[in-house]
Length: 220
Image 1 (cartoon, rainbow, N blue to C red):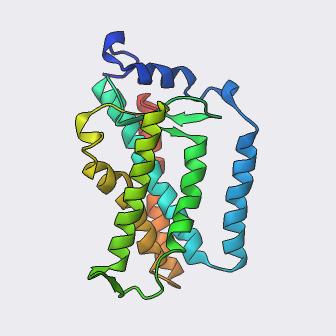
Image 2: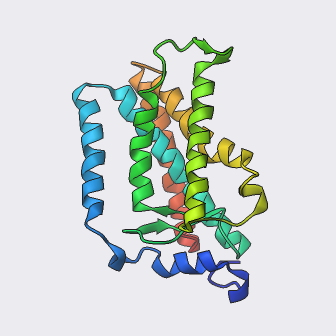
């Protein structure tokens, strides 16, 4: 059952609000152009330095989020009630039910910022924990903390008890650790650009297939 075909009472208020502005060009704000310029600058700096490991890690992070966002849209239409997370409020453009253009630009930069913080020594342990695992976990917890604050503002919404505060382990694990984990994996491949491109290419291919499938099903 699609969300649009579901009884009105079954759909959450946040879902109705988000659907009212979903891919509505009239919400466009010029600040979006400034955010795009920031993203371009971040990647241009790394390209200039020939840090393809950082560039590809950043893209891997963003593509992994793209997959999650499409799954989130599918959850809405399968449940007929709500996605796992829903975005409302003042946005320049709502791309998917849980993804606006501002979040998308943020995630394009987040992967780059994350891998630049990783210790050079991959084998280093911090408090006995492998540094990659620790950094992935800590950055994921920080991101979930930000989401908690966004929920408090009323512009970001969780509906299901098992994907909500204080039950956040699934959000940490599947909502963010997959993003940071794949970024660290690609980054640690160093000069193996072919291997990095294979991973990024595979992510892009999966995203495209899922995008087309959901678009044809009318689930976006």
